[in-house]
Image (tube, rainbow, N blue to C red):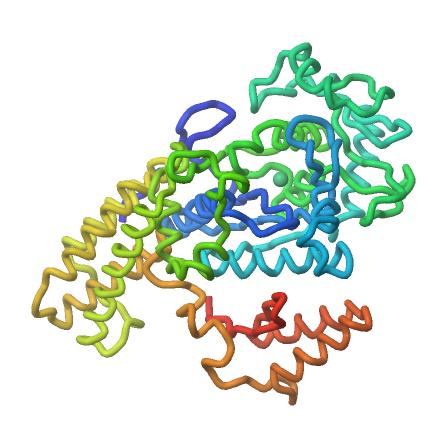
Amino acid sequence: MSEREFRLRDTMSGQVKKLETVEPKHLRFYACGPTVYSHAHIGNFRTFLNADLVVRTAESLGWKVTYASNITDVGHLTLDDVADASGDDKMERALKSKEGEQFANIWDLSEFYTEAFKHDWSRMNLREPTVRPKATQHMREQIQAIEELIEKGHAYETPTGVYFEVSTFEAYGKLSGNRDRDKLQVAVRDVVQDDNKKSPADFALWKKDDDHLMQWYSPWGRGFPGWHIECSVMAHIYLGETLDLHAGGEDLVFPHHECEIAQSESVRGKPFCNHWMHVRFLQVEGEKMSKSDGNYYTLRDLVDDKGVDPLALRLALISVPYGKPLNFTMQTLRDSERNVERFRECDRKIEAVLGTVDDGGAPSQELERIYGEALDAMCDDLNTSVAIAKALEGAKVILRDTNLSEDSAKAGLWFLDRINGLLGFVRSDYGPDKARENGDEAEPEIDGKTVSEWIEERAAAKSRKDFAASDAIRDTLIAAGVELRDSPEGTTWVKKSKV
Ligand SMILES: [Zn+2]
């Protein structure tokens, strides 16, 4: 196949442009992950799905992808979105809520929602990131980065914390266009908490707080880091000084990503990231999604309660290109279920001829052309609506053949494998959903104990607060290909497929 250009809209320049990588054919990609204080909703998943489509498109082009997607498990405050880390900590607030009563402490809450998120992630058939770092695992590096910013004259300490001095970074505002300092100050004046700050626009790197439920020792006393510094630091640790691509929801352009740029470029003196991608929000039945309006959906609401096929939900959420608002409706979901079923029909038809869906053959000219057009569409700023239409066109070709020959069946399989690699809604990388829950297959024995015995041992370790032991058990099982899923009903296990 001839060389294709992968083009994406870049928020910084406002242009759809070629995604250039520092190392040829190696994409180093950071996507902001969730704050684990509740279940992620389908709008969050629209963002993660489009990051996943970037990974899949790059892989389909034969690129190597190093993909980091973090877990924010401390420091994201309710008013972070408008200003400088004021308001309540989102995790602490969740612990104090009605739902929070089931958790022993904030660490428990964080672990529960992290595991729930990872479960949802696999149900949405998202590619496993190369690394999924947690903010709390990188406290030392964050403290070091803040010390460096102070040394270089970009940050200062006050009685309430350490702040980044926006006026020391000339390019502040280059991503969001919020360059007018006066306006910026007006915008945040109402929520400024600290009169000792040099400018209202200065944002928090470290909050001093003896009462915070998650706190660490630092040169400035006990406290916790600001949300923005976490992502800057984790991106540098895993991806190097200049990233190829950074993605997030449209709400992250300002202040989160603007602040990441300011911190990172002030410390390193090098461009932080060469390409920025932001995913538009979705609406539900034409309205803004909100808990109080009853149109707010998590995967639990749709997949567990309504029995929606997770792959159909995936298809519905990617049906509109990421740069346009998506109006999510129950009709979209029904259409998607029907379309996903067409691909299952293809699989069944092929399996009837070949006895397997594991081993594809050479493509037919027609299916090769259609796949090429689907890949072209994805390389054209992730044009999912065209790519999905092409996938369906290929399914039609397979289904119209009433007497499928062995060669045609193999060509069909070639097509389905590639379309699934690109769009991910034909089959789950994590195996059929039912087989994922325990009970459907024989329980493996690991180091002389059954998985159930390990689960009991881990529960005992947890109840005596020996988290090192409980983590070690989980790691042993992961190494043996068994993943644990914690829920209020108890712990279940699934066998991981080879991916
Ligand atoms: Zn982030």
